[in-house]
Amino acid sequence: MLDAYIYDGLRSPFGRHGGMLAPVRPDDMAAEVIRAVVERSPFSPEQYEDVILGCTNQAGEDSRNVGRHAALLSGFPQEVAGRTVNRLCASGLQAVVDAARAVTCGEGELFVAGGVESMSRAPFVMGKSEKAYGRDVRVFDSTIGARSPTPSSRRTSAILPSNNLTPPCEVRTASTTLRRSRLACATVCPSSRHCVRVRGTA
Image 1: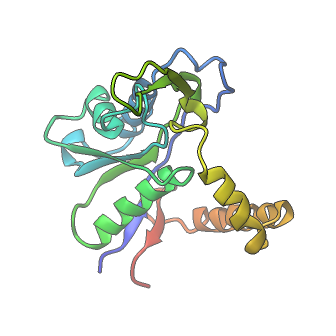
Image 2: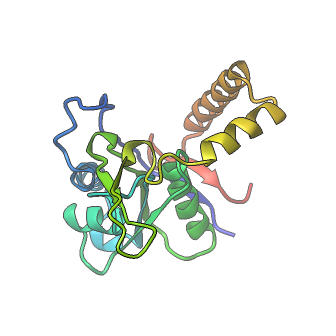
């Protein structure tokens, strides 16, 4: 099994809902970040195996494989693949995990992995009638889920108490995750100050 390393990382600024980044399409935003991180690396775009982006909403401009769209917009040749994964709030992390797994399995040597989301640009979606020739029109705000209202929120509220996931517990979990992340970032490989091993043999 091969080792997988994070060679470098870059992100756009955080923006508030309806803020300064609201006019920017999510595929354009991802493309700019990808272009910048690739330009400052020693690797040419042709050397990359795949671009993997996590995205949750996928109801508007980020639909139809935003990973592929962003890769092409950033200047990657069409021979470099692109795909999108969805694990809701862990979508970007899942993209990194997928890339690391691909490297350790020998499916490629170089990947771009990350996530993109713009809730400011999440569209309203119109539901279709559930009966023939129906005239009822329902419009949902995909910012809070493309199938709102959804029973999943009720299921979640029923699951949380049974697992003792109280707000203080969530804060402790987040603190532990941050501490582990900083520890990982301190484990630097010799070739780059950005390079961190994420998975592989000891």
